[in-house]
Length: 534
Image (cartoon, rainbow, N blue to C red; front, side):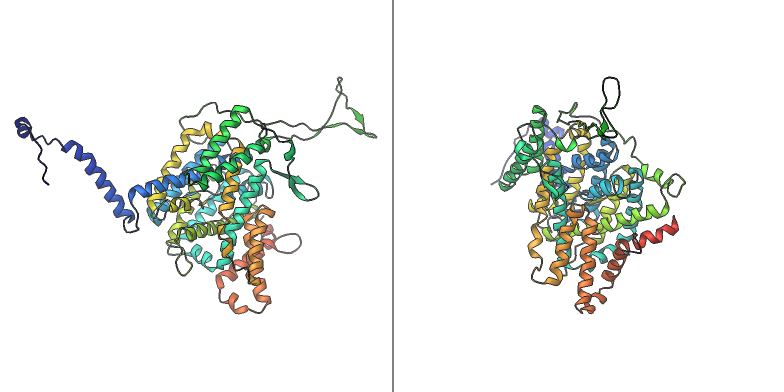
């Protein structure tokens, strides 16, 4: 059938095509779509531009919690929340864009859960006990080193991950999940320390509608139900809903209660109550934290006030009389190196395996470029104020939505930048509203544990050690290291020397990690060596 458009003489004389103005935007849109298709190979991958954009949005919705979880955790070190939020968004943006444009993989990146816990609790608050500025400097140096090792011409990081037995890589993903879960349980107020059993259930019988632990349980059920019903953004929906309830009721946020040092009680005259012989009356105060609504929901982001380039400034203090010794700094960097290299490799393998991006040789597609992405994000993140960047298991949600190319990652990256305009909102999110997300993500990361060959005792025991040591030691690195060390020792002891000797990369990794954890006296071998440097 032919279609005839009636035009006036004036239209003919003026050359006015009534449809040209409407066709121009359509033509422009089609041209842009074709350009994206050509660059990312979308049609070849069996997808469409619309599907890739929707997949990027889906991925962002499933991992947007990192915008308030990561700053909340890093702020425990004394780093300003707003600085950490800026760094989190920018580092995620850079990592996602590099992953999409270079590796052309639908994997999103952001500062890693677990790695930020290592940064906060092991490097700064406990363990090494250095300032957050020095910790950022170590992340920066480690990021540069990783950039070099990730170059396709070098390919060292790909060689390392390929050298690890498949079952241990799967166990790493599961162990990280358990590590996130125990953090979530603690932040929800469901567990507490116990002098006899180390950990115990919280006093749940005292919960009321004003207790954060109760609403964390509601949030967990809400996320599960929404996910079961295939609702996109289930985690974000739950966090926002529980936060609104918490703000409205002023719910008790147990995790953020503050306990100052105990002190001796005094009377009206300022004299101590009691005496040395019979004992003094000791007072233990507690500053109760309740959820409060944000003072502002939208604002213009500014550059970090304290953390921007703080890593570079801290580098100048290394080796100084009043600074951190070279040996100590190297130990911190080595610790980050081991934690990051295996945490990133394990997570990337887990995401790639779930997304079908692991080939028949059990190798990740474009792995060198993918590792370059997290190295770039880590460098930018350390310079702005956040811990190591890694690939996120939630990327699988975008893959399930149909994402097959790097456009999915690029879309997700740009959405992270938008988060900078809502700093006031993110800062007011109660910890108990976020905790269920960690538990849910931990559960998602346990998916592949059934693929471990539990019938083979030679691999089952190292895999089990890898999984359980992560939450029990509050360290991803400890789980991976002792899993590999035990694997090598078991294989050598049962007489299967060939399997170990032929895998030279694995031998080198096991040797280095043994030096990191064992040594003369009460020191590791590395610590013993670094004493000479200090």
